[in-house]
Length: 229
Image (cartoon, rainbow, N blue to C red; front, side):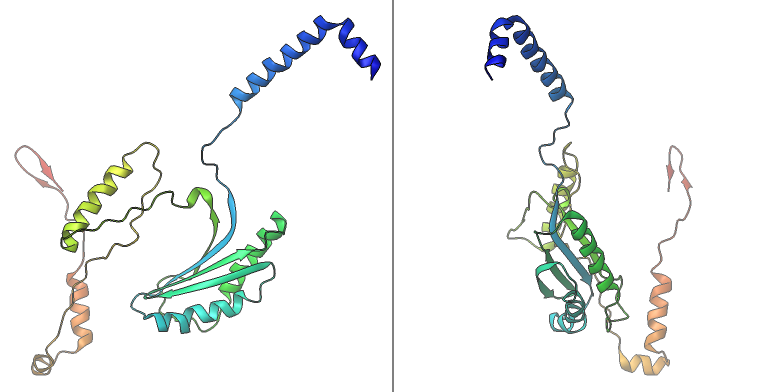
């Protein structure tokens, strides 16, 4: 230790030059270092989402959530999980064991996917199979905006659409998702007496509506000064 102190005292110039060189190299490396204000981090949560349009919360719980929970419960490496069954939607949140290594967590996520794939008794009318996604900080929303007012839903929808377009135009916004949007639907009530009179079945009415409700390209229509598609 004394030899090191004596060398530093006898060679102060060399030591100062070495210190300056370290500072210069540190500044150069710092300027080249990748920095992110919100770095993407893989979290210890897995979400299992299943959409079942038109189903009541009770039906979602019985026919979707419960069978999936029975399979997921047998997966090793879980800390806990909970579920929410809403109208037309099943959401299961699974928390991985934080004490496990990253390799073990990846294996657990794969096992969850396999458990979901082999779940029995799920309705055959599901539009899409259950989705399994691991939570990543870069995919989580950083801001929730709720719109409300003394107006009709159509008017509120127009304001929401305009706000979404403005948010999507911001340079640092990657994606804007409208989670509470209600798609426009049309209800058709048939007259049973007229069906009997014209000898038309309900399947024929559905087929006729499907044939008429088709959006196909009609080509271009040439005007005097412009062309309309």
